[in-house]
Image (cartoon, rainbow, N blue to C red; front, side, top):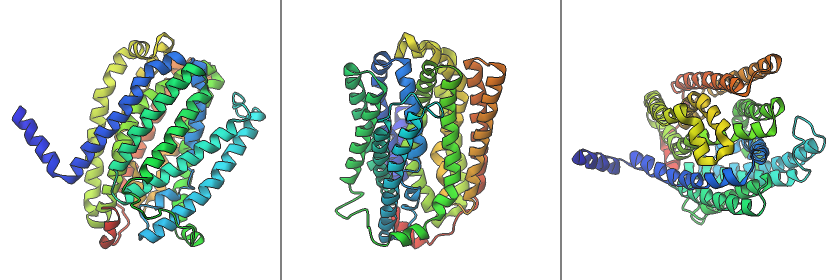
Amino acid sequence: MIARGLSLAMRIKSHPFARQVSGMMLLTAAGQGVYMLAGPFIGRLYSPEQIGIFGLFVTLWTLLGMFACGLYDLAIPAARNDDEARQVSGAAALIGTGVGIFSGAGLSIVADNQWFGLGVFPLWVGAVMTSAMFAQMVVLIGQAWAVRRNEVMVIGRANVLMNALRSIFQVAGGLLSPVWGTMAVGEIVARLVQAWRMSKSKVAPGAPLIRWRGLAAAIRNYRRYPAIFGPAFAVDSVAALLQTAMIGVLFSTAEMGQFFLMRRTLDLPVAFAFRSLSDLFFARQLILSRTSPQKLRPFFLFSGAVLAIVGLAGGAPLIIWGSELFTLFYGANWSVAGDLAAIMVPAMVLNLAVAPVSRVFQVSTMAHLRLLPGLTNMAGTLLVFWIADDYALTLPQVIAGLSTTICLQYVVYFAAGYFVAGHVEQGDASNSTTVG
């Protein structure tokens, strides 16, 4: 057994891609582990109501943050050469600055008028959101260059630092002022340091990553990225926001907090796989699309199957002991979140299987099919909340409906991803040096 393990380790060490996978998984596990250690303190320092408001803010940030660069960050890895990539980065930064200012101002107006159930936020929430959007913008640009350089280990190391810092800030801040704003500031500062860490790496070895000349041409030449992926990302984001906000509307802020903590806990393994493997897999998919497109479908299928098996094995304890585990880890206030987690595990497993390889759409000529899973999620979410309001469903019944909806979404996602993996853009193999 020991000899077999040593033999496997030597094979991994000798294979560059496997070595990158194992390295990224170790780094991401370290980062997630650090944040998990803060979980028992966060669960006991902050009330369900405050975590509910923080969860609503993070959901809004996630929605808006997808557009923090106007989706031009998606074009940076695929740009024809580094000069064009720098121009695209400049376009992303310029658009992102406007998006950040507009997002903050808009959120303040909505909160002040108490529209859409967002009256729980104070007027100054706009300044927090603008800062958050700026942090997200610089992180996205840095990550896109890491993928372009095939230096994805840089992302893993920066994530470890980010998770350590947000853990420290949120726990220390909770001792002083256990409110949602403290948690939000901790997230923002940690992400700014994450971006700084990437900028000091060999992703940017002395050369600027942004060029401010030729921005109009870059926006025009790469407008297909926001045009194709914008609707799909918008639908995904609005559905996710509805799932959090409507829990607060139908039940209470405390129940919204239970839902958010449950989702964030279940998202940890998904985030682990996504952050450790997504950029790495995308770099691999870029190379395969240029050199061996016939290998793209087997790569997609095998990766998804392995991740689903791993996710099912990891989620089984939550199905059986969800309430007990959440109470033990987060404290007595969070047993409801554990019950909800047991219901949501199947959705988490399918999310885990699809998320790391989902960026295959970015190398396909059928990228518009990326909209299908989002529409499935949106339609299912609206149907669940219409039934919940009309028939006065309980919180567990609503979560069961959402879990079913998300499962169906990722089945559609996987099927569409497998299909588009057979329809890739035929790039010039000589350009593959930009990613490795």
